[in-house]
Figure 1 (cartoon, one colour):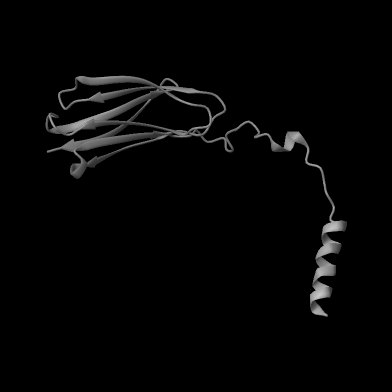
Figure 2 (tube, rainbow, N blue to C red; figure 1 turned 180 degrees about the horizontal axis):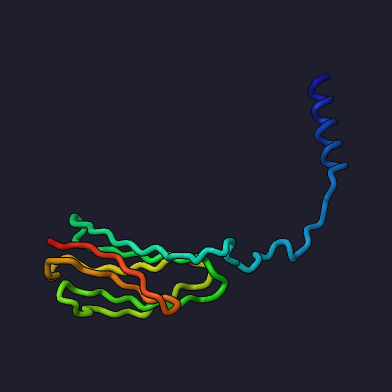
Length: 128
C-alpha cells in the first residue's frame, strides 16, 4: 500500500510541478563593480621554494570584465632590473604568476615590482 502511495505522490509532483521559464538575461553574469568606495590594494607576494629551486611571485587583483595589463620587474639587490615582463590578466581572471630559478641569483634583498593602473606594488624577499 505504501508503495502505491509513494508512487502516486511522486507522479503528482512531477505532473503538477510548476515549470517557471528562466529569462535569458538572468543567466548572464552582470558587470563586476567594486562594492565599496575604499580603494583596493592589490595583493603581491613571493614564495621561495628551495626544494624546487625556484621563486614564485603572484599578483592578485579584483576580477574584471576586461583584460588588465601589468608590467613585472625583478629588481636585484644592486638595484638593477634583472627582468621585465609585460603580462595580461585575461577578463574574468584575478592573478598573474612569474617565477625564477634560485640557481645563479645573487644573495641579498630582491624586489618583485608590479606596475598596474599606473601604480606600483612591491614584494621583497631575501636570498642567502
